[in-house]
Length: 293
Image 1 (cartoon, rainbow, N blue to C red):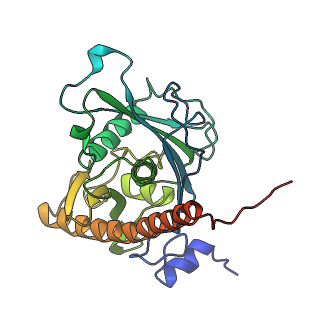
Image 2 (cartoon, rainbow, N blue to C red):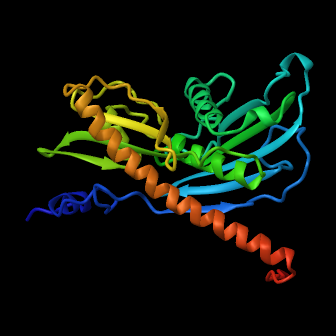
């Protein structure tokens, strides 16, 4: 008697390893104002005072982002006369990746440095930095749980934290990924990859760090994408795979990723409206107060 695993049953009915359809994103929840706002800009830790914060969960991946500023720049040599300085720091908790509890240093870890730079590039395309010359805006991201797609979740959390802090933006920066690989004789494009799917698409053992390992074949693609959906602008697209189909294959995956960014934007916009409604009720003295013993 042969026993079928859960993944085998899901593949027979054309579902992914976590039960999603190919064009379905993971369950996403957004919470603006996760930390109490203050005007303190002195500490680099996410647990200190902040101007705005957001907690975003995409499946089992959870990211907390804290924004401080605009505030004075500590060193005059770092001041820019025509715009604000954007400082981005990305950290991970020791318990965030499954099975690996190493403490990573954000100043020396290659993947964290690369993803901090990508996050800064994506946010710089939307923030109106010219409105705050000779000042600094600090964005600190803490990855609490990593099941793949931590770069995309960090971009979405940073956007919501900037909006919670009142930083003016051209448009919301929404991020999602798409992938393509041959598995079980089927070749299809899926959206919002989790850790196991990233490993299958990139051939890497580390998986969910968001940086491909380069071990995939020419038919495998993992593409994180960040867009400004209302403008139809792509601000970030990173693909480190060699594509046998050329630009046409890349365009198909990019189109699916942009549709995923549109779905993410709808969830983020609903969270912003909910936050705005709560602040308006609090201003009018109609907010619900919960007392905890």
